[in-house]
Length: 414
Image (cartoon, rainbow, N blue to C red; front, side):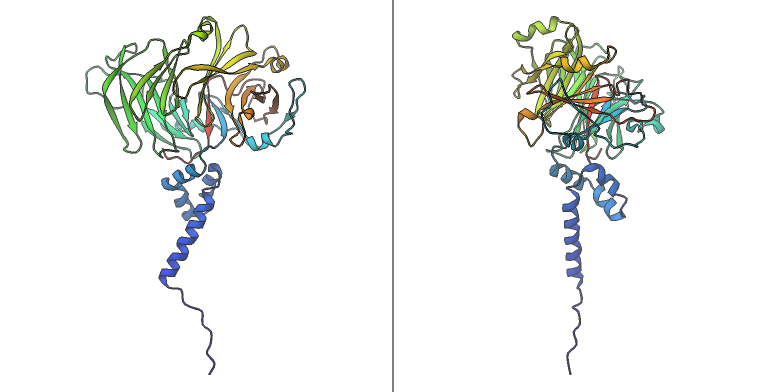
């Protein structure tokens, strides 16, 4: 009698191993997909929704993609119909790669057409019926507040990629005189931790002009506030509204280009004065000032554009050890400015450096009405890209103002 062939029955152990193996392969694939498509992939199935929504997956995705490019630049306030400029580096880099000199350049269109205008900053409209003001952007997360309540809570941590936000209210002191917030800042480095901290400076005597302040710190890991024991002296020349997270610290810019900082993990403060060879700058009339974090968090830059010379300026860089400002680049935008109409102007967006290239690829991204301009900081050449028209958007005007914020796609939990 011939023995028939019967397939081997799959045991529960081998089935579990097979499922685990498939899960691992799926995870390995998905962590390599950009954040924005992953949000759409949540609709594939309940399983994909659970996997992609898991904070552990989000953190692993961030570690797999440690330096995402800037995806858009947002304006400061949500009371505009179209509040951001999309940045598509794939299309921009796909433009002709030959060097284009400042007297003869091509115009490319890097954006797909047909997408209607929308406003991600309207996230709190249903709950608060108010517009939002962005205070700071930090590695994919935005710190915001209600537009017409600038010094009062609530504050918000918002992720434009996932469209999720959390509400923060600094703790009351229990004292009769309530403290006044002079600055609030976000510290988030996803390469070190999936959690963020919010640093709040409050005057002790309750006045907005108080000279002594204390610090309260919110941790998303513990979801609680902690008041530091020590107090700090306020520096009158520091503009505590100008804030950036860089080098593990919250940094505030002063009227004379000095910098005050608070190292978040070490919980210590510091101060950097303007070097003597740059003193002449502070006596000039500044038209626009840009305080920028660049190179994926590796550089801190300062640009002052003066009334008498809007086309020529210096880009200063801060020493990594807070050794002070030094001149990094000299910029001449005369050929660009000559092409603008007399009523038009430009704004600086950010400094971009190709992570696969050398410093020669560093570019200054600018915006003028209806256009993006990429200016090579090493050789002075530039390329101009037309923005895709949007319904209801007037492209003879700027889409964002000098106070603008970088946005990077992120699955970070808020």
